[in-house]
Image (cartoon, rainbow, N blue to C red; front, side):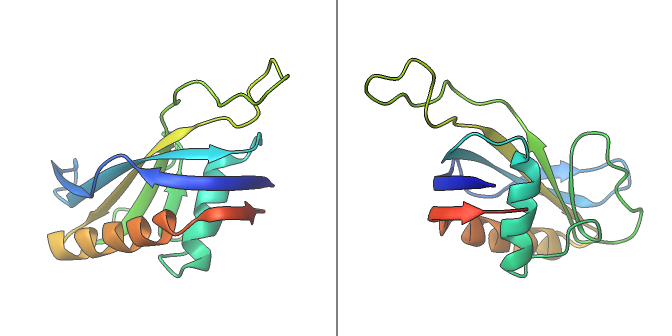
Length: 135
């Protein structure tokens, strides 16, 4: 469980070319400001599932170790990409709010389907402000 102060896109969804199966890919990156947790990717899956972007384990996946189905999609993957140092608050030496980043990538046989899913994810994530997320 984590309290999200905000999720901010680092750019709008963009065409990333095709994957090894010839499917179109669309990507954008996010920067989150949140309380500490060990389930960052699962929290993002929960936000996207609650917003009806897709279903975790069916068409939304996380980590570089996931085996993405070979079908037409669309599929969405979340890969943690580190992030800048956390935000500190007065009289506290450790960061109070870590700022993890993630890469959100969609893929589909049809470019329009990949783009549509990417924009749905983008729209769902930018709405998150002062929200507790429990995966």
